[in-house]
Length: 163
Image (cartoon, rainbow, N blue to C red):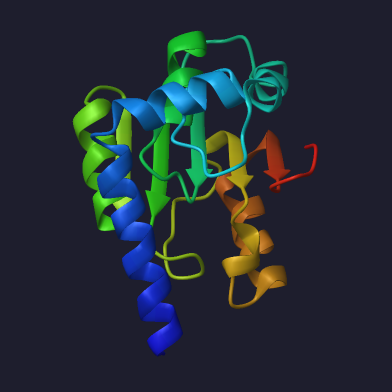
């Protein structure tokens, strides 16, 4: 339990720093092509790949599992006009997301395996470097499939790997 607390505290500190560090934002833009407050993942090329699969219609809904401060979702919203949803277990990350993206958005603090959404809500569900936090991966993937619309798309990406 102490390791989990230390990890959570480090994550909280990261998002506290990311919210106010211009240097970190510049680093992300230089290293990854855009400032999504990355910690070594989600470069602009991966995000562009996601855009290719977002349906071209009105009323698109996108969920990011472990959304951090929502900057990646904000980028997708800017490009598509989608309603964006995200959850993360970091209070600091969610506070920042709510401040940055006030319209057509819903950000909540939540934990994988404990949070729930109505069936057939999302056109696109994204999980970047997060699924391994699920207490029961099979059960959680089933939950995600229930949240997605019948023609929905599920993107999974990991640090150091292509989508």
